[in-house]
Amino acid sequence: MLDTLRVSEIFYSLQGESNTVGLPTVFVRLTGCPLRCVYCDTSYAFSGGEKMPIEAILAQVAQYQCRYVCVTGGEPLAQRGCIHLLTELVENGYSVSLETSGALDISQVDSRVVKVMDIKTPSSGEMDKNHYENIAFLSAQDQVKFVIAGEDDYCWSKNIVAQYHLTDCCQVLFSPVSGEQNPTQLAEKILNDKLAVRFQIQLHKLLWQDAQGK
Image 1 (cartoon, rainbow, N blue to C red):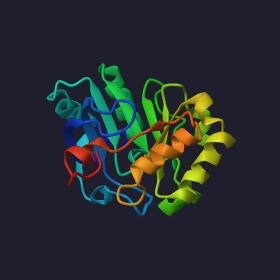
Image 2 (cartoon, rainbow, N blue to C red):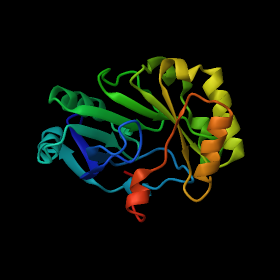
Image 3 (cartoon, rainbow, N blue to C red):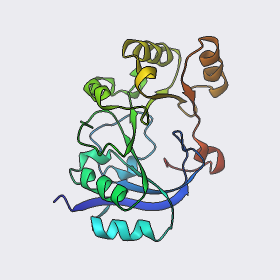
C-alpha cells in the first residue's frame, strides 16, 4: 500500500554526510534494500522494521521540532510509498533529502527533495547496478556520492565524473571507506588533480565511533 511503509527506525541526530553535514536532522530509515555493498554499515535495515502509516511517520517526525528530514535506508525507493512520503514531508514544510543507492529510478521523486545519490564504485561489488539514466534527473541542488576504497575506485570515479560532466549538473562528493582508504591521502589526490568535488568524511563515525550509518 502506498500510504504504509515498513520503517526500521526514526531518530534525531546530526547529519553525518552530504552538504548539510553537522545540521540537526530527523532520519527516517526505511526497511529493505536490493543491493549488498561490501562496505554497507546498515545491513540491519535489510529486513524487519515496523509497518507505519505515513500519517504516523509524520507525527513522529514532528515531535523533534526539526527543520531537516533525511529519508534513508536500506534503499528507500525499494518501497513504492517512499515517493508519497517524500512529497508529504515537503508539503509539511520540511527541508527533505533522500539518500539513494542510484540503482533505482529517481524520475518520480518530488523536485523539491534534495537527492543524494550514490554511484557505486568497483569495490562496492554492486557497480553493475548503477542506473546511469538517473543522471538526467539531477539538478544543482542534488549530490552524487562516490564511496572510495582505494586507487582503483578513485581513478574510476574520476573518469565517471568527467564522462558524465557531473560537476556541471550537480554537486559531487568523494568519501573514503572507513578502514580502507586513508582520508588524508584521498584529500591530497583531490587537491593534486584539482577536482571540483567535495571531500567528505562521515562525521557521525568521528563523534560516535561505534555509530551505524546515519
